[in-house]
Image (cartoon, rainbow, N blue to C red; front, top):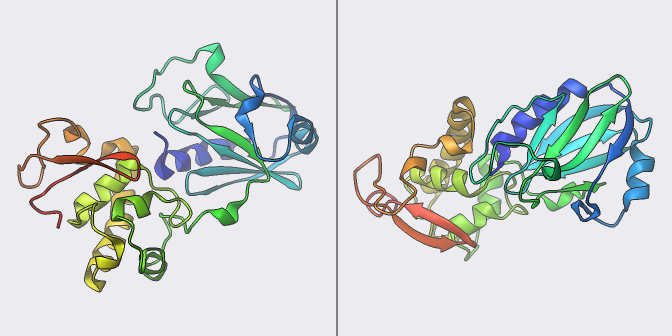
Length: 259
């Protein structure tokens, strides 16, 4: 599942197309276009316009085109393919093969080449003029102070709050479990129960985990990833991992050192 690490790889890949002119777009299924603006508006905003910049906020990839912006959300199985190349050959829970009906959106360039979204399960989307203000601070850049504000006085569980893109953007299920495991924090704890030193630990763990997993190549590369299963054990102390659902997502943690 693409989290901020994967979307950052997509951003770097899409940057190779910056400066090109868009000649046409293809959107086989109109339901993939979200928001208030339809296909005519999308075509008008992109036709003969230059791709000026590629940005990322959280898990949202933003293409600045002419005077407009186009947001790409990758859902559970979305990949970006630029000029036939993708930085991620395979995601968890999906096939690496590219079938014709998996191609959800294509942007063709006058200079040659294309940018395409491949999404087997179709949970992703594109949106013209996405509202970036709905997203919280980017997890890769969030400060200790911003983290405290995002968690302060909340009765929500740590895991659910970290998954809330309006509070902190970019974290998904795998990153959250890895971050909390490394920080030694129980994902079921209410946010308001955290002490200042624990907030310090969490802020450091967010930064460190994103950096380590980025070097390894993705959110799936965490230390506990291989143990996210029945009878899975904690790589740190050998205790059997516990499982529950938090924030609507399957959550794994160690009852020995995550307190």
